[in-house]
Length: 361
Ligand code: F6P
Image (cartoon, rainbow, N blue to C red; front, top):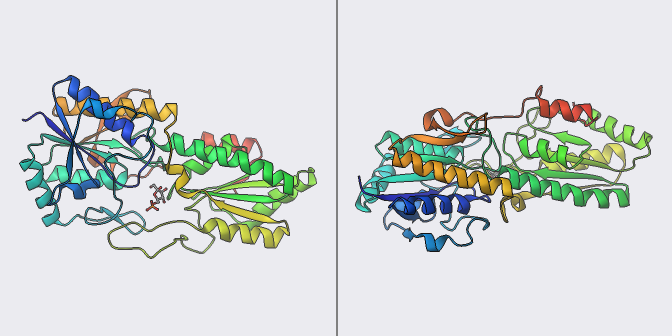
């Protein structure tokens, strides 16, 4: 085995990717390994390869820098998900070309940093002989195999900041303010931010909502003399009898792009309540900026443990945060295609309900 590690970031970017890269490079270098960054997602392994050496001196400032210095992609030749999360086999010719280039570069192992789609690609590569390990990233926090993914905490912090700001303007104008947040088919960002940001209504894909219930909450607040209401909702929420709201057609090489449901819900709230209602779609602000302290330490631990998996030649695994707070490996096979969603009967929802927060049901 050579002592060269390739690092690739895949899927949507999020705060903390650079912190993981930094942790891998620093610990690998201390142990006598060389690191190389694959540029632009897995496509960087196709001819002509786009690879850059990564030394410890290049890591300055990366702990706090948002995005990824390597670039990333969530569509194209290496897309392993399509539609609403349906798995897709990457073309064998593409995988073969990547393998030939990987070997020509003299790389001994590859660290794939990404969410379900990226880790599914990693598993397909592992099955054809790549020495690969994974690191779980996504603001959606929807991977079942780890207690949490990195990027999620930062996204929640961004959504809470938005709710704080919306509170004062909602109160000043006696309005209903609707905040649409990301999360795909899981309501983690909406639920955590809603609780931390004092939302009155939280709408998540895991709980079917109806407009009568939202109106009841608004009326109850009016009766208490509270003439404003804050609604937070996940982009993956569906209206009764309708499908997901998407902002483009689904391609064969990418997942459907969710978004836009917030405006529809806000319109209906205004029609029914006769209260002025505004909608804010938080969008990619949730994916930008510096990672929180929680994400920084999580990324650092993930990065170090990913290197240790390589040093032990434990390939085909992903590092995961276990229930007891320790780090441990899970097989990529077990980690993929298992989406973790908010438990409607779990503590998070029960706590919110105990405060009188409505889930629109
Ligand atoms: O998976 C992360 C995520 O930010 C989702 O929450 C969101 O639905 C999607 O990616 C947005 O993707 P894009 O960057 O292609 O708009």
